[in-house]
Image 1 (cartoon, one colour):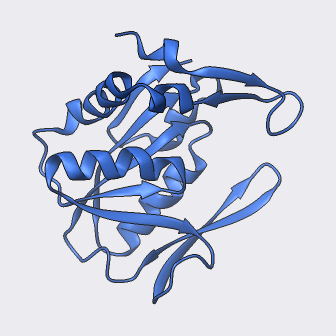
Image 2 (cartoon, helix red, strand yellow):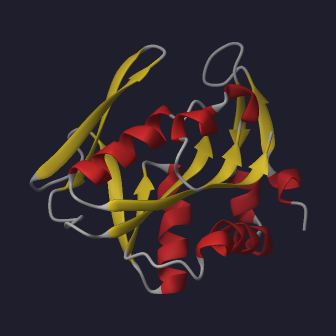
Length: 170
């Protein structure tokens, strides 16, 4: 199954000049969705890790399915102010400012091995920030799994030294 055929380009969204990669056609097709989750898991299926950390918001879709498939716990990384309990946070730069992501302070313990999941890697800034937070909390990043990689933005370079898997490359 050619998963890239299920990704729809939406020109000029969310702003002019951006070509948004819309994953909703893939999610609508049960077989394509299952295949995507299996492909994202494939390189890590036999790896030793404790939990999956899924990045808001579309990372939740794939991270939850992957965690459920393996019987692993799921950590959710949310934007500032969305988690109800004590948090650890990381800030990172965007082209238009700064963003903050948070996880509950008890979601990662010293020695925990974490797989980080998101739907897309562009510049790698969000993923790198999450790796830094995992390590600051005493965890180890076993790798990253993305559905889509925008190779022309060279986000993989921000993750040098880490294991990185992307199922579909544009």
